[in-house]
Length: 238
Length: 265
Image 1: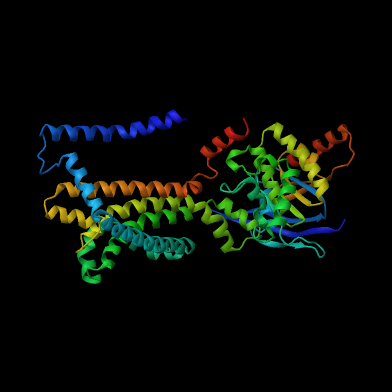
Image 2: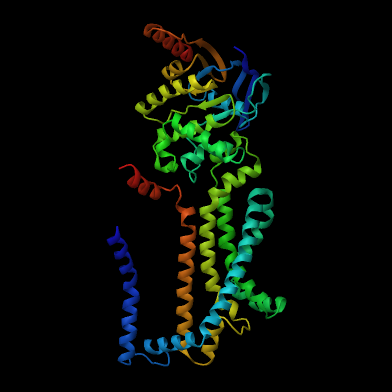
């Protein structure tokens, strides 16, 4: 598959009380177009920093991020851990937000309508973020990322704040949505099962370094998945 | 819900009703000196006379004009200055200490200087209103913009919004409730400063009517003026609230509860 993103020797250093702290250390990564890559690791392993640098929210100390030729990605969309919907806009307006003023109103309305249907939010189109549940808000945030004209979506533990039931439901919905949308996704999580369930490839990050990469077999038996989970956990704890 | 609303209104009317009854009884039983506290009937008759002759309306129009022009000047200057300072944080170190100094000076204390500098025309009266109303609008706008959630601004970054777009689409809408509250307080202050403004050699306006009544020893006219200021102050506040309620309420939890009750139960 044609790669969409190539990360070379990416390093990020912070100064903490005059001491340099390395959050990312010489990260090398290639993300194929249309792939679903999950990144797992303990808290403080550098997962979020990696996504924030790819999104342009932080600058790398050294290293490069290249969107490869032929890629339509100008700028990736981002789904944060919290939904971060604008509280004064309705669900519908929040989804339309990235393209507001950039598209004809009729075209925009049609696209928003499609996202609302896809995410099961049609009934809540006119509701404000404070009026909907956390799961619905996160779906609306996903709709806002999906409507943005980009092939690359970065997701930073977007299901982390949800209860187990909603989390499982949204995981299944994410699988269906991304299978239909052909977007490239980098999904950060600290949940190994979630990483295996959603990802085609699982990257293990620890202390700012890539420890291991695991391919998830498409048609795997439970025992295989269990072994994979054990291997990933061993890798994290090693 | 309806009962609660009626109950709230009755509670609000209780204390004024008690004061009115004491006023009526005190006047009837001649407990008050009618020269100092005119009876309600006398105040009512005076109010009717001033209304019929168009005197009250003429003074009201002039006062309204001063309040609104003064407030419009305040809003433009205070809002723009707050935006400039909020967006250029380096400037705040130069400007805020001076503004903090001016904030503590009552506008009334500046009246003699204002007369010297601006004369006894409309300018000095408008300036008193501007000085009295500037800080609520300025400080609320500044705090609304400064307290904007940086996480929401990041959303704008992520979706490629320019600095200008981030300001107009994220920062300003988020600061809007604080700005509206500042405007509401400022409007209230403008009415309160009106008397001070119309003390400056005025020949019209509710404040002038009150000052003139004092010189004529007509407490009934003074009370008509005082009630008019209070009544129209409340009216402006109410109308402003009705006009801006949508922007204050949208997306808040109270609104959420009513939406849920309407739609999903």
